[in-house]
Image (cartoon, rainbow, N blue to C red; front, side):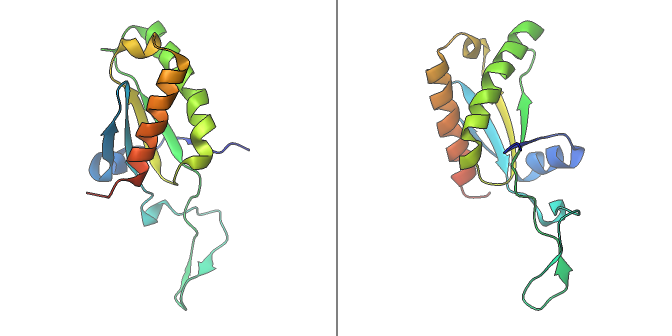
Length: 135
């Protein structure tokens, strides 16, 4: 079972653009938004909260998307960066707060720096994004 889910829905991207907060590291940036109440998992067992009506449990797994624009480079460079980021995000998945994450890089140098340097930058940027106060 995976610890993350892909970010696919238009509603998730809309939440990121309206409620998301952005944090920048040296090589990458992260936009994060906690799950809004309407993102409840409809397949989950309903739970009664404080004597109120039955409500669905919120989605627990973080949703992750990648945004690597054409300014970074051609398709080969963008895919190389995405392939480098995915295992790093999976390694950090257990530390991520539930919510929606969009991860991107600032420029093509992210494809050439060392694995450890990129991983350290991504780790600190993810932590800063999910621990920051909402706007």
